[in-house]
Image (cartoon, rainbow, N blue to C red; front, side):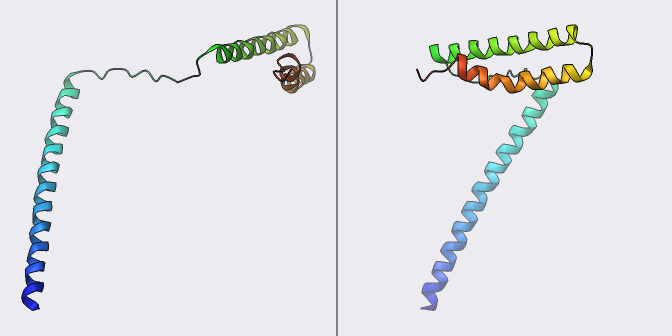
Length: 115
């Protein structure tokens, strides 16, 4: 029984050594790659990555974006008019709060898709 155990232990140790050697080769290769990459990036400027935001396509999505844009434009026009026509800060603040609270109501009334 002890010979069998010794043989299995020797097999496990050999397997461990083989895995350690393979890991050492991978790490050496990765280190060489990092070193080469460091040399190349030190010489060349890094390209600028443009982050693209994936957005929905199609008629419904385009329609929704248009509606949201129109609402945002109307809200902005109301704010500019309030700023130009009203003198008091409380009145301007009131228009800001009222118009912000009115947006969901307008969306529900004007863009109701259930009917």
